Length: 381
Ligand SMILES: Nc1ncnc2c1ncn2[C@@H]1O[C@H](COP(=O)(O)OP(=O)(O)OP(=O)(O)O)[C@@H](O)[C@H]1O
Ligand SMILES: [Mg+2]
Image 1 (cartoon, rainbow, N blue to C red):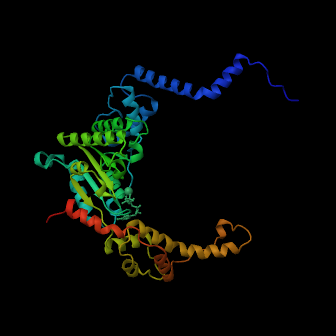
Image 2 (image 1 turned 30 degrees about the horizontal axis):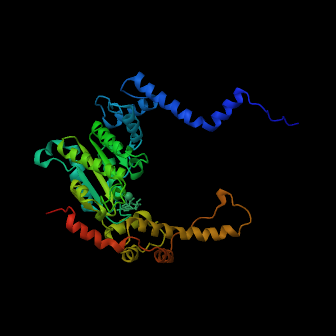
Image 3 (image 1 turned 45 degrees about the vertical axis):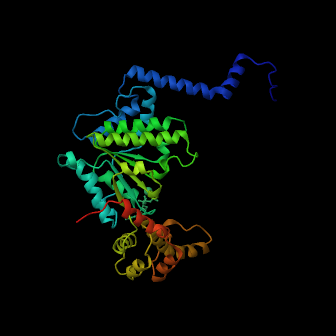
């Protein structure tokens, strides 16, 4: 039998109801108190166990042998400290495992990047005075041509603290917070120097200021803070680099462009680079029919690196499709060790793949060339 509902509420019932309805706010308040009290009791060093562990992890990796460094610099308030902690999650630890050899072609871009970032970090002695390193570097080019890959290769090759910042980690929905985030980010980067701040898709963070009245006050302040901080970098000897990537370079503010002094075009892949990609993604198997690499290279003029990946995937899918037709005729699920073998890729599979994959980025290629001619960095022999 069901219990009748109480007609009068006891204090306990009331409390349960209240917690269920308004409890969340109370909990948050409690959490905040805990955080603040932690900061008070632990002094300005490391907030809690988790961060202490992380701090050990990072210092042993990046400062090999040198005295250990805490993960966070001594911040002046609990608020900036909390922002600093959230940015720490964007530090790439270990390495993203992209090597220069994994990136096909793009020899000019690689050489300019090595000259601008890798060498000054490895041999700071040469890069002083007039030759002090470029602090702002922009990678621009059509989508899917390897800009993000290049930045990751920099992170892998030169063992610096690497901050991987995208628009989502820097644009806070709280008014005014983004601007503080930027300030804290640069403070963290200086604390962990040498470091690289990678701003991917920078056009999303900063586009031309003051376009009509549509621009939000808070986002204008964010941009201004970024400009001020980047200006600060050029005046000091701290090894902090800003590496930015975009596929809409013409949307950048003139002031931002001035601070990104080194502008490197990452173009669509040349025939040799395309061939290298095909040979890596669709390796020829000894004893099987040789794949028509010449044809692939010829027919993919204007394809980006990621388009080429799609062509290869499509081609490799065809033999699997043939197997799947067979499997669909089976009444039951075939056990794993009895599955039929997937055959080799045939000539017509390549044709099908080429027909079904269209280039996505070639239409604007000339705009990038023009931007490069007007603003880009070149290798002068
Ligand atoms: N030069 C290249 N060598 C090898 N693979 C490449 C190259 N360029 C592009 N790719 C392939 O394309 C994929 C996308 O590359 P990436 O993310 O670096 O492009 P992106 O230039 O950052 O594009 P977006 O501007 O859209 O962010 C890579 O994961 C890789 O598989
Ligand atoms: Mg990218």
